[in-house]
Length: 526
Image (cartoon, rainbow, N blue to C red):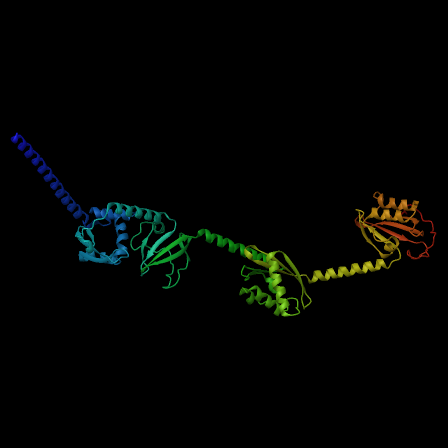
């Protein structure tokens, strides 16, 4: 029994010992594998080139070329990465054929990490380029795989976004050399250069560098390609000693501005032939547009108008030129001008200015979109003179008609009363509104008679009668006096009715003869 128990314990102890030995071996192997992996991570970046063709490269070197990307050959892509980090690399590499070995020091991006580029000529046109980071040699830096993956995904997203954006993005060093550019910039440079581009990258847009301490200002520049100009709005952003440039396509804006200028020029040419003075003020009440007629009408100096004065200065200058109505005092004139501006800005406003020189101007104010306002100056002196002369002639004609002893009334084709003189109003009272009212008034004020019936028929049923054939007759007046009447056709279908007495006495005289010489009630022959 004791022997069996001892044998069992021996077997168990042997099994435990074997398992412990295996675990220790696994840990030792893992440590060795990790060490070997760590040694692989610090493998140098080495390229072998024959001309511009890549012969061989270490895995880190191939990974670097893959991260750079681009449609160019391997040498051009590598130079695009080396250029910003080793600014004098092109000149130093040109010396490699004579020196066989060139060592160049540079910096990693914007940081202070020092990089070393070793270029060796191995003969037979083969160059070996070795890029190392002295500060990271044998540092044993291990990056968390998840963090590395996240950074690579973000880098891929940002690179893809910058390469697909339609705007041009590039970076300038302190010597105004292009040290980096996005895909749109590279594609535009290749299209303009008719082939692959090298280092340093060409500068497509000549945008002045902003002065230190000043706010960045958007500038517009153009890229010429086969006689076609592409316009861009360029913005700058300082990053340390470098300058990031962003160029947004502005062809649509340039076309719109050109169309606007052409439209304004067309309007200007049209306004130049107008006899009416035009002055357009913007929302800030600055003069933006005027035509030559404004200079002729206001006598304002051309230099004053081209200086784009304000509306207040414009009106003050008009007052000095005596081209506004003379006010009683300056305060009332200023208030009147303020009312003119507000009325013109809110709606259509018209004023008539009687100037001290005898001219008469019609000033019209009209609102425009975005708060602008336009003023039209029109010389209506001749129109006012003609109107006044016409009114004087009308007044003279009315006075002549009122001085006649015969009662006169003119009716339009519609029966509307056109005019009547004082003798008619004294005979029949206030003038009627139309022919029907006049006939009703006559019938109410006189007794029925064949003469009145004939007059009514002559006025209402005379459409088929010969033109200008007068119709005459006699009737009893409102006071029982004998009246003769005559209906005469006038131009335009109008008819004139005349009442008169056979004795030659006034129609309003109380001593008018009760009888009248018998007049024919038929139309007289021509």
